[in-house]
Length: 94
Figure 1: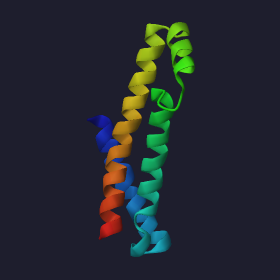
Figure 2: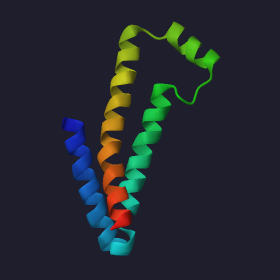
Figure 3: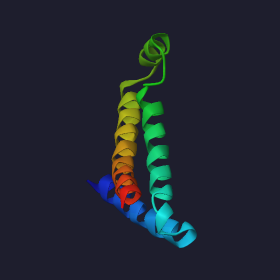
Figure 4: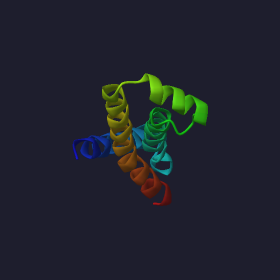
């Protein structure tokens, strides 16, 4: 829940900065960019962009603690991305 609230604060600050720099018609730019960055980080850490051999090699060589840390960071990045993407979509259509 902490990361969702941090993501919400980041999205509100992003909308305010976008309005300040580019006006209300481009209020979706910074929250969308932040959400995209956090989604890419989440995809990279989840292993969604790797092939089967790479995933198998990573699974065989990493410890359980490393795997848990990677999954935790991936979930936190996704929780940071969700409010940003929701606010960006909402700002785009308003």
